[in-house]
Amino acid sequence: MTAAYELTATPRLATKAMLKHDRVREVQLLLLPERVVLLNTSSAAILGLCDGSRTVRQLVEKLEHDFEATDLANDVISFLNDASGRGWVVVT
Amino acid sequence: MSGTPQPYGLLAEVTHRCPLHCVYCSNPLALLERQDELATDDWLRVIDQAAELGVVQVHLSGGEPLVRGDLETLVAECRRLGLYTNLITSGLGLTESRTESLVAAGLNSAQLSIQGDAAESTDLVAASKRFDKKEAAARIIRDAGLPLNMNVVLHRLNLARLNAIIDVCVRWGAERLELANAQYYGWALRNREQLMPGRAQLDDAVGVYRRRKAELAEQMEMLWILPDYYEPYPKPCMGGWAQTALTVAPDGVVYPCPVAAEITTMEFASVREHDLEWIWTRSAAFEAFRGTEWMPDPCRSCVRKELDFGGCRCQAFALTGDAGRTDPVCQHSPDHHLVRDALVRANQDGGAGGQLVHRRPTVSTRGR
Ligand SMILES: C[S@@+](CC[C@H](N)C(=O)[O-])C[C@H]1O[C@@H](n2cnc3c(N)ncnc32)[C@H](O)[C@@H]1O
Ligand code: SF4
Ligand code: SF4
Image (cartoon, chains in turn orange, red):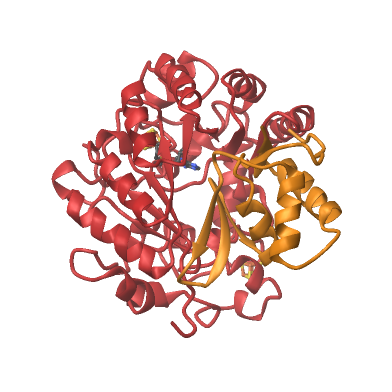
């Protein structure tokens, strides 16, 4: 369950999880069977890219481009490790 | 929307009909019948209004929700509105084709309940021999690609089997297991003297839970829902009255929690007469215990009042006849002896004894 992420892994949102833009509250939510998690902007952006179509490396490049930032790899990997420990994302 | 909180969850109790007869069922003693139930269009309207109100998650429960043939329609509407759906089921009626059509409609998750680790336990507490159906349901849920969440209600008659119950859930491939110590509402309250465990039995079970939780950490998430009678303070029920979720009963009456129908001194409004927004924000019943203003002492002057909100209003009513009193589970409650006496009886040799009553629609305390 808690495989450490590498740049070559392809993360995907777990089947039970659903990302939602809540238009009533104007926030990003992660919905799970028994929980609703309020996401901050960067978590929502990372999880939004975990669709099984790109590697962590590609995901980082896209984020760095979209947010005009650099050196995001470590932060993204540590977030993904945490998220997979909680069962929010899986590697395919 | 000023100061009123917005609900995240809707518990849609689509029916009280159920093929099982659990002695611990938290449904009310006065069960609603088929002719009392909302029609499909009513439920679709409820779902739309719930989404506007801020609901993001819909739990389909009952009774056994699968007895309604229109679940797929309701799930599809939730999906259209971007709402997460969770089916809470006994597993009876969960065939492969039913599951396929529910998943196709957009079902996100399912929770399966069992009564114990073997057919005899299902038989004893649910008066049914359908344990085989439960095992099949677990497989069907997993084959459909849904995560398998399981729930078992714990009480005097099955606590000693906890280890074996956990084994069953592991064997069936559960991802998450809720060990729900019985809460004493509805039929569980009716059978409380037979269901309440003794202290030693509970301590043993806590030991089993801790050991297995550590052992299975990588495999299955385990959750222990506290037996509140043995706690010094009450549970912070539902995050406080009318704060985070609402329940719509089979007949369309709306409650702040699944067991509030038991509070016979309050008047709750129905979606047949009002829209959900009005009921949530303005109805007297929802306003009655919001926040901390309503609290009597000892809660009013207590440091924990924002932590447990004075406990459960339904439990206060069930035990004292007054929904506005401090939850008798609290050691500071002037009514705490009601809980203490029940515990004394449960800890006598052989427990309190008495006859178990299975949940059945024909038994009614309110002369419906
Ligand atoms: C009332 S049932 C309705 C759905 C379905 N019939 C089932 O049993 O799963 C909803 C959930 O509440 C649990 N439950 C029932 N009575 C309870 C009680 N007295 N205390 C705690 N949980 C209870 C059940 O195990 C089930 O997971
Ligand atoms: S707890 Fe048992 S009796 Fe109650 S609704 Fe669920 S399966 Fe039916
Ligand atoms: S007195 Fe009221 S607020 Fe304080 S712990 Fe007891 S129930 Fe909670």
